[in-house]
Length: 330
Image 1: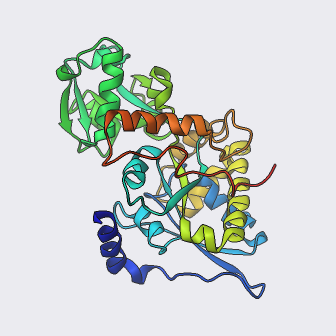
Image 2: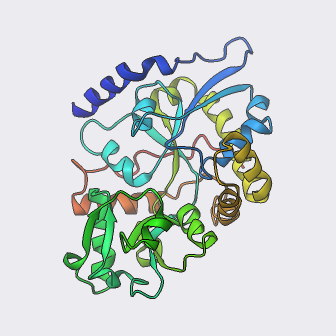
């Protein structure tokens, strides 16, 4: 009931921002609303490439890209006020758990493997999880976040109770580490990690997926509303055909793709965008048969861990919340 109330409140506040779109019945351009999870970055490049290079137009689509109010993109999709958005498998655990799961489905993996981990200043003993003992860590106080950190620290022989947890106010990882306001930070290396390299800050880093394969979950993912998928399956497939081409182009042409993203978001740092795009080029698809594909074993393994640790309000059903059915058939 709490989830349904949350949806209704968000819809009432921002319903004027989006207009529900009907299906294409007369050969007219079909409208799609895509809401970002955050400000534009290289997780989103394929969307902007698909727009700029006419992939959406070739599919008969007119795609509106919008930025969301804070923490509401999943709710917008669940309520039908947006057709697609970006989310993350770890944060979707709360949406899928319990008797009233939110009606959203992950339809494509933006990046095939988890590129997040813990970064710290070089040679201060935090190159491995146990080394976080006696050092500070900037936390969002998320249940899955802290359980992940606890798991890797203890599996490495460390004492998690000796890690100093500091409420995170980090907006710039490089500044936070340089000023020693915190010793370690959870980052997605393709953005914040690359930024430390560009700014000449020497760091140590370990990736969660290297410590335990259960943490090689999907982050980020494209999600769609279940009602939208049911009522407009061909539009969903057309959108994903265009987006797949967009990310494939970004993988093959990182500098050109970076230019397209920068044209759409000129406020971004050019050097960082290009470096990030190059870092992600071989990670969008990686070892998958095609861009966007989910491995059910890997998807389920993470939620089995979430359930075992009791990290959501109720269990997350296995084989729930994702599909490969709308991806292009190769």
